[in-house]
Length: 231
Image (tube, rainbow, N blue to C red; front, side, top):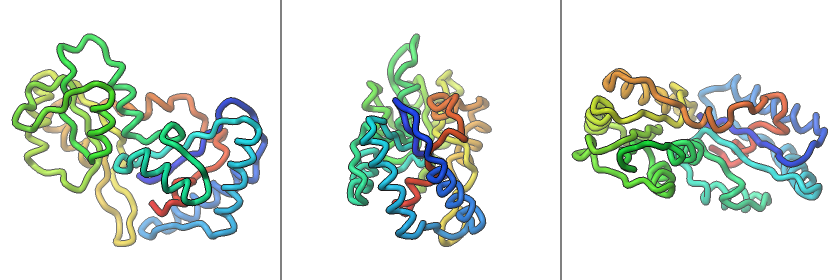
């Protein structure tokens, strides 16, 4: 759930070493799924230097992560503290990508949404013009948006079920069933989405996939950049 991609836009740079380093980082991390993976300092410095070089060439660098709980401002601050100056505009989280898709919906009877997920997801959906409804008003929602969070419970599942069975459209920030932690795997967004889909009788649109559709994995200049933050 915490995988990330560094995407360069507006230019073409041949940095095979950066790509190879990122892929090596991810491969090493996958070989130890229950442990937190941290690149060594030398590799971290190499990535920050590579990003600075790309920016010096006028290439826009965008950080992508499918982790919905962190806010874009929080991630930008952490990147800046690492020596990679960043703003919210440089960060695309799965919550922000989902909000972008949901915000572009047309033909809704109202712009009311039931959000099941972390505060960052609530904020992103509200910022694209939706009124967030409480669980006891779920049937008023035109869309239901789901993102993984530790507070998911039966009350939320019941609210989502009522909204979807009343015609609300279902969106999700991802489908990862689990994500690794030092204490072992924990349920991810996909596990919650599966419960909502089963109870609601509808399939979710994974909006983040729509936003990054067409992004070629082999064109990514570096992988695992957000991993440097310790997520």
